[in-house]
Length: 514
Ligand code: AMP
Ligand code: MG
Image 1 (cartoon, protein in one colour):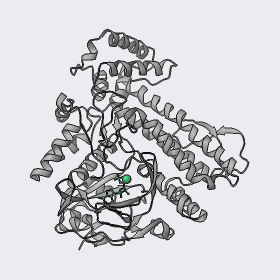
Image 2 (cartoon, helix red, strand yellow):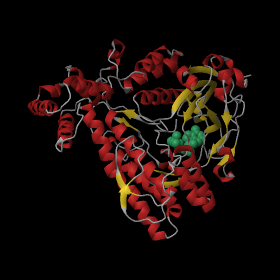
Image 3 (tube, protein in one colour):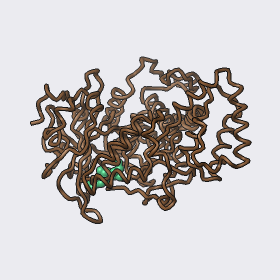
Image 4 (cartoon, helix red, strand yellow):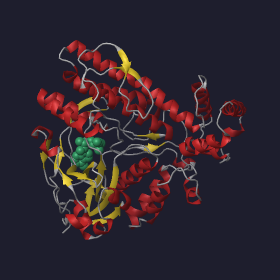
């Protein structure tokens, strides 16, 4: 059995299971017929304190399929609600089961969740199962995001179940073992605000603070006036703001800041989440729930890949605004915690959410300046950046390859480079670079470290999934995952993944609920 804690390295705790019963339902995964390990993330396993060799065989397959439990696991499905495409609804883990929290040798705590592990009390009409292709897709893209330096849940393993899953046709079933700082969502707070007591909401907020925002020991102000500098968790970057009036207000402001940083990072690599419903927004500030997400090829702020996003609510260019909207739903859910006076609570909530705009703009500018090799700041930089984006948009330039070509002085068949408007822009950029105090080589290094040479392009991801799904051939996926694991190193193995999709593949569509 796989429950040999000493050999495998499991060190489970179950703090979520000790929250009030309203927040979850105890439920075991439904065993599957013949589990087989499709992929195991050796590096991640090791960093969690697990022995990948011990998990590589039958034991690992049984555990990651949910057929047997790691020692100390106390499986449960989490309750949450959420605004889906703007509409509030009760949800919960309908096909995911949290096994517990693995405590790493360095004392960090991570949720281990099995996605596709069978029905739960929150499954509604669903079968509780997942299809192999989309689980491999989450594996590839979440690991690519991690390698790009973007906070994200990670993928530890995918197991095939040996059972068919019925969608429009019969598909091979699979379970994804997912690792996250936690699975607490904006929707978890919305659930608590709507259906739990004030005491329970407070317990959830205290739990979230303990887990993600350990109190820096700053003042818990009761006098709530005055402008000051926020306690600085920003790695040395100062953000003006109002002093938080209590720990819950501080929590809200921190979540706002983390999401401003997160979405700025998405924008800088052309990542489109695709389904930014509030149940898919993690309080930890990690990217979560890789459904219809995809990376943009041609630069166009209106880019949407998701087949169900008919109105483009979650288009690339709308992601910052939607993030702010989602954070406003969090703020609403937290109102009773912010202040006992209702009007004052609303003021505090609005003030916290209103900081998103400036925090996002600052983070975005920082990211885009780096992409252009700019260390210092000049007032005209925003215009310089937006001019380039405008030219890219008009010329339908490939987002990743444009910045890559600017970094390495390549041509990469980018037609835009031959236009007068680009030449004029380039002169302006060169002049701007010339005014920097630091040598040209540092600008190059900054650009190299900010512009990936590879992203998981849809046609390459599809190629890998097809080989795995149709022929059980994982070699193409393994090669892709390996190349994606060092996205800022220009090595020959990346060349194959550089070209944008052929024109026929341009109308790529992604699907949810698979
Ligand atoms: P998602 O689009 O993956 O974020 O899922 C939205 C909601 O639908 C969540 O509550 C999921 O647990 C639930 N859900 C998605 N697929 C299934 C399924 N096959 N069976 C049961 N619940 C599901
Ligand atoms: Mg979800």
